[in-house]
Length: 271
Ligand SMILES: Cc1cc2nc3c(=O)[nH]c(=O)nc-3n(C[C@H](O)[C@H](O)[C@H](O)COP(=O)(O)O)c2cc1C
Ligand code: SF4
Ligand code: SF4
Image (cartoon, rainbow, N blue to C red; front, side, top):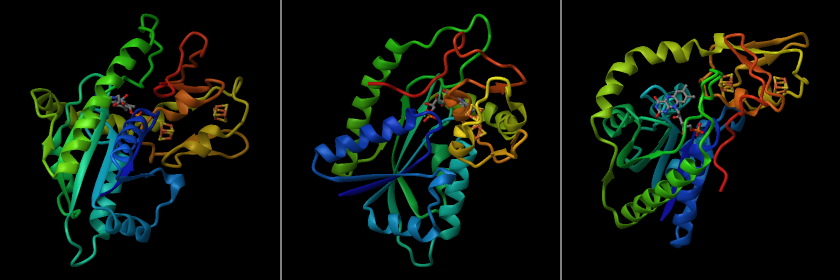
């Protein structure tokens, strides 16, 4: 069988989950491919249609933001719906969500989003990894690497069960639970905060070395440099990539420069 996954990963957790899933599928003698939906990857409509056509099963993978799907993935699903061709047959789909503390999303919400896309969700799993929103509060707990490793082990086992279910044609819908009720509440408020996230970002020009890592790697192309300064644009999906991956730790939030010596950044899971 051939599995093709469209994924978004701000800081590496979701990419790790998809790579792990794909390795399991390959070990079992099947084909697995992954496609980033980042702005820079520039997947054309025709290419997306071709990927969907050629796969037996399509994956969608993303982190959970505020009990919801990040705007970039919502936009991608809207695009799948818009480019669906007349007569295009339905295709089985699986969903991998990663989260840091409480998922508060769940399979029912994803099923609603996928309506009209031609993808029929037959499997949904959520993988508990770690929070990528690093805090500059003085009492912020240091990042717990041991806990992340434990969760990666659990995640790998869950991704193995996902692979087994898909290969045997069985449904695997996980992630229902009381936490999804919290999601109903927070989903009403969080989109506004995420949409306004770009307004909180800035650059500490005294330490910035103008390397353009942030500009070139923003998944939504929402950072501009005009020679004098940086502008953050409304398309920002609040992924924390610019903040966590700036080599000099110069991205500010709410005007606060967080010295990277004092406030380590999160740069994805390390085996
Ligand atoms: C804007 C934002 C909102 C988030 N909201 C949630 C949330 O509601 N629940 C949760 O458990 N984790 C939340 N997280 C944490 C991420 O879901 C988690 O760290 C995820 O694994 C990151 O995946 P990535 O490294 O592939 O981007 C949030 C992260 C961001 C950046
Ligand atoms: S990644 Fe950091 S150092 Fe490089 S241009 Fe952006 S803010 Fe400046
Ligand atoms: S501006 Fe920063 S937080 Fe916003 S989408 Fe780009 S990299 Fe992510």
